[in-house]
Every structure is written in structure tokens, then in C-alpha cells.
Amino acid sequence: MALAAAVCALAMMLGFASPSTGAATPTSYRVKPGDTLWSIAAAHGSGGDVRAAVYAIRSANHLPGATIVPGQTLMLP
Image (cartoon, rainbow, N blue to C red; front, side):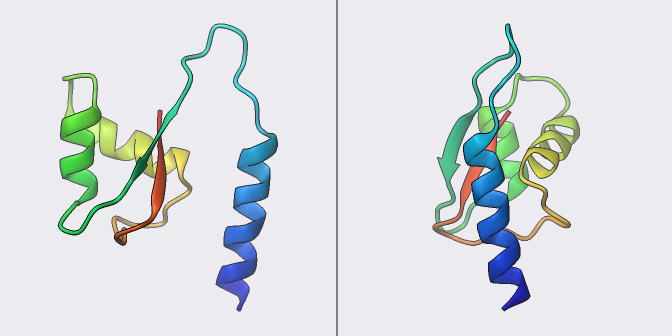
């Protein structure tokens, strides 16, 4: 129950957030079966260090670990 409340609160906060002037507009990605944070970061990263891209995705989505589930929507910085 507390997790659901936290997820709802996070969704509301993200809905009210606005990027600073000149900031890149983040895109969203819906997790598919078989996806991992590593595979998403490699496919959608800037071509640099995949570890940094994984960290950026985790930070942008306030993920405590690397667990993601199909159907989950992630913000890609």
C-alpha cells in the first residue's frame, strides 16, 4: 500500500516538473518483456559509457535498484 502511494506521489511530482530553459526534453520508454536497464541504456544512450546511462536512468526514475517490469514507463534523460 505504501509503495502504491509513493508511486502515485512520484507520478504527480513528475507531472508538475518542468525542465529548465535549454534542458533536453526527456523521452519516455515503455519496458518490454526481456528488457534490462543495461539494454535500454545501451540502445538509448549517447553512445558513451553504458554504466553512466544506467545511472542516469535510475536517477531520473528514482529507482532503488536495477529491477524493472514489463509495462513500466521510464523517463530517459
